[in-house]
Amino acid sequence: MGLVDDPIIRKLFEQLGVNAVPLGVPDVLPSLQTGLINSLLRLAAVDAGAAVVHKVKYMTAMHLTQAIGATVMAKKEYDKLGPSCRRSDGRLQRTSRPSAQAVRDENASRCGDEGERLTVVESPKEMIAAFEEQAKAIRPKLEPSVYSHDFREKVEKLVAEFRAKK
Image 1 (cartoon, helix red, strand yellow):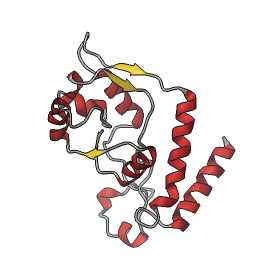
Image 2 (image 1 turned 135 degrees about the vertical axis):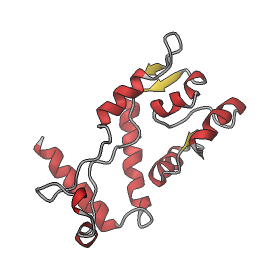
Image 3 (image 1 turned 90 degrees about the vertical axis):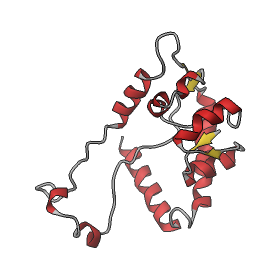
């Protein structure tokens, strides 16, 4: 499987027993053509631009990666930012980056020309649940290289509190 060198995804794939090969976008198509990889983890919109969409037939509907929902920085670093980076209320200006839904819509529309479209496959709920359990199991294994134990516990507590309110 071809993927970017994301330490979280890499550890998850190790947990799942997936043999992952980190590749840059220019290397994906030749790697599919030569058989170095037989699947990939990418945004479909990126792959369509790289002609990869013509080499694959199926795409899972399951979202495997997350979009960043917030940028967190120390106050001393924030204070170094110029006024053009701040809104009148002191918060950071939004960038022109598209929302997660906009990216998903773009991906769906760029999955090949008519007659060459990828077939989107729904993943069974049991498989998704098992996948989520494996993902939870790797969280401690990412300490301290990706985040600290205290930070992980704080984030998990905040997520649990947020979900409890919904």
